Image (cartoon, rainbow, N blue to C red; front, side, top):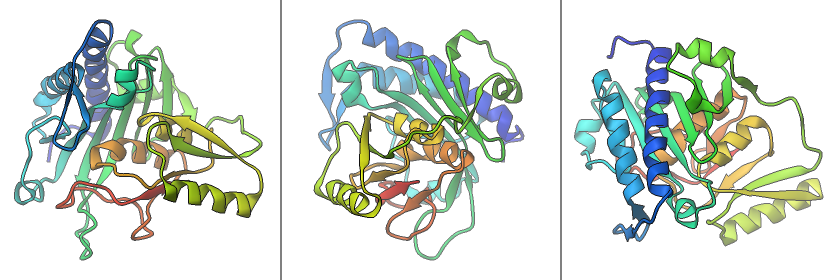
Amino acid sequence: MNARSVPELLELAIQASIAAGRAIMEVYAGHFDVEHKSDLSPLTEADKRAHKAIAEQLSPTGLPLLSEEGQEIPYTARSMWQRYWLVDPLDGTKEFVKRNGEFTVNIALMEQADRPVDGTGIAVPVGGVIYAPAQDLLYFAWKGSGAHRLERAATYAAMPAYERAAMSIRLPLSARHNTYTILASRTHRDERTEAFISEQQLRVGAVELAFKGSALKFGLMAEGAADVYPRFAPTMEWDTAAGQIICNEAGKEVTDVATGKPMRYNKQDLMNNWFIVQ
C-alpha cells in the first residue's frame, strides 16, 4: 500500500482536480465537437484532456487509476488492488455541452474492505474531491475529517490537507431550509423518481423540488440544502464514490436500494444499483 497518508494523497487529488478543471475550462471557452460513446453518452475534448491531466498529476503516487475515460481494466486485476483512484474526469458532460456550468471533476481514494459474499463490492471510499471548475468551488473530505467546502479553490497553492480544511467551511451549513426538499437530477427523471416524490408528499405533506446537474447534488446534500436525493437512473462507480465520502463525513448516508446498506465499490460490474442519499 502507498506509504503516503490519506490526507497527503487527498491534497494531491485536490491539485489534480484543479489541473483538470483548467484543462476543461480551456475547452469550455471555445468551440468543441461532441462525440458519442457506445452507450450514446456524450464525449468531448474536455473529457480527454481532464483525464490526461489527472493521470499525470496522480502518477507519482504509484496507485492504480480507474477512470471513466481510461482503459478498461479486468476485474481479475482490479480485485487485487488494496488502494486505488476512482475518477470521473468530467461528470456532467451533458451540462458541459449545454454550457450551464453544472459539471464537476470527481476523484475518490478507494481502499479494499472486507470481501462480502453478495457481490456488492470490495472497496469503499476513504477520501473524495468534487471540484466544479466553472464555479471554482471545491468539496472534499477524508475519513474522520468532516466534510468541507472551499470557494475560489484554484487561487490557493498546494498545502497540507489539514490546513486547507481549516480555511474551508465545515459542512453541513448551519442554515436550514423550512420545506422538505427533494433533490433531483436536471437531466435524468423517470417514473420511479416521480413515484418516490409522490410517496414523500403523502408522508410529509408539502415538498419542494430542487434540481442540479452532476455530482454537485452530493455537495448540496452535504451542505444540508436538501433532505433527500433519490437516484433511480443509471450511474457508474466513478459518479458516486467521491460524493459518498463527502456526504458521509457531513452526516449523510448513501444507501444502496437493492441491499439497504452503504454503497460498495470495485464490483465486477461497475454500474451502481439505485441509491438514496439522506
